[in-house]
Length: 61
Image (cartoon, rainbow, N blue to C red):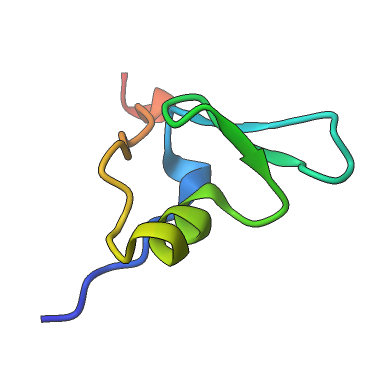
């Protein structure tokens, strides 16, 4: 079974920083990086991000 790649743009913990060298951040993990946080987590640990939480869709309120 193939695991679906996590899209940080759909996560409540993802944020864009003002740091030109580290423009993407994860509030849950507490870090900023040049790469997407889910990519950093996977390359560091070999597992998908366990803190991913899907954003609530405002259109469906």
